[in-house]
Image (cartoon, rainbow, N blue to C red; front, side):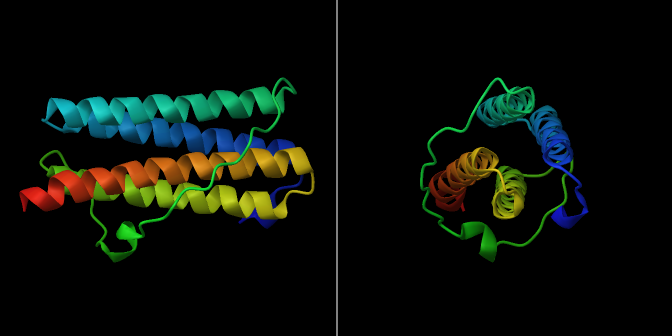
Length: 152
């Protein structure tokens, strides 16, 4: 997939669109869940994805450089959970599974982009975004483990 990009700007445009999709996805989930705490969590993650988009726009405009990358442990919980389809009546666990899997996909995307760009600053930007997505995934895994698994 990444081999189809002709330059860094195309990669950034693609990543910006992916962040918009992620933001919209979390807003979609927030509108469809009944639990207020869950709604709030998804709205907060939509805000995080919006921040990622803004960071990428600043990088594209030359206003921002990379920040230090933080290592994030991977609980690998999403590796062992079945795929679910978003629905109006999905339960909390299913919503968390959707979020985990989406964050895992975003992590993989940014990791792959970091591998193929030649510019060191861009590599660090993508590594930083991969780290952010890994943090999001871990937060959903912890939530799933602590709340959903203990309820069932």
